[in-house]
Length: 504
Image 1 (cartoon, rainbow, N blue to C red):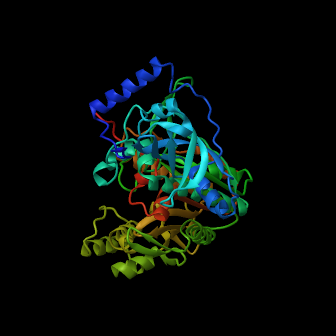
Image 2: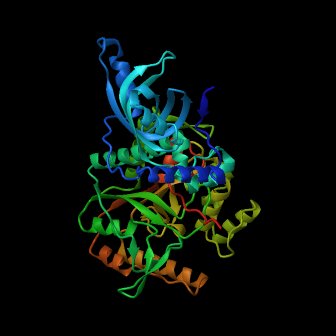
Image 3: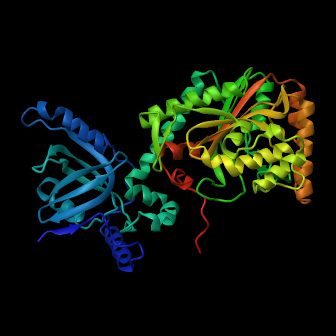
């Protein structure tokens, strides 16, 4: 009766399984076979490429002609059947079946093969053929153990109950859940496409510092470290904006950075303490120019990654080919039924908030009240792609004021499926106004927390004093974009190694 060993192995906690694998390792050492000593194995192709090659040439192969291949990968299933066995090898492209016969590989090699375990890394040389059941396979003429697996693959490593362990052991997740790899292949493609798009528009990719000498006054809390040689505290960056705009001052008129950002804050389905953002700045344009860029970029990405501008995200159809544009005032009027322009004073605005049961600070201004109405009534309605623009100056310290309405700034955020995906400005280039806003921001932060180390970035003010041209700027999170285009519910699904609380 055939002895069968399936891909699904006993749980990693099985003491007997661990002991057996250690015993096999010791036996290999004792027989003079070190399963870790091979330093190189020449692979000529991978599984899916080999299958495609055979399909293309199968009809034209002459009698006796063979297609020889050498593959390397992980043994993920095996069926021992006396003098011959079937197995499956998993590599970087996918899986392919192996036919391993004693008469083809030799009696000693075959005897060793029968003692190998699912999970072992192997090399296989042989010829491609199609079995009687129609499966393209490799008839092995040589088979080599390249690395011994000392831990069995888990029996069940998918589903909601095991998400925590999947994130912690992404290396196992990638082995037993092939669809996970597809997400990260798409992530890489998305980044490549974004770079190609921006490069084609004349943007230059640059790098700016991650370790900063001061904590700026923004609301995000930074991670703090210490530079031993300089004997000063340093802060991991919470944005790339100020250094990129220094480059605009320096005459680099189109710049962008794909940058790792660090914020010492909470974690949930949409937030991770470290994440990837893209910020870009273009001289001599404004926030409308950034709107046009976002629309064009997202349409292109949807077509290239998903095949159409219409995609489905968590059961909701979203059309990235159609974008609505609303000012914040228009959006609040549309969804909350209140009109900012009817408020004659801050007191009237606070009274309107009270009437609609919207909580606002006791000293809230009209602009602050407008933002609170937006949060309470509007954001959860923005399912299809929507630009919300013209934000109150109170919550936009880096955006240029609207010349016709100084209470507002030339800023927009864009929303998809009730989630904010990016933020853009006509950048503030008035150093006097910028200094006042920074100092006000830091003063407010110090009033809230007397122990804060927040400071004004006066060097950035100095840069502005040399003169920065009118500039449009945009920042958006790569991780949320990848979530959208891969239909992933959590940011942890699109980060190879998300931040996790240490296990006990």
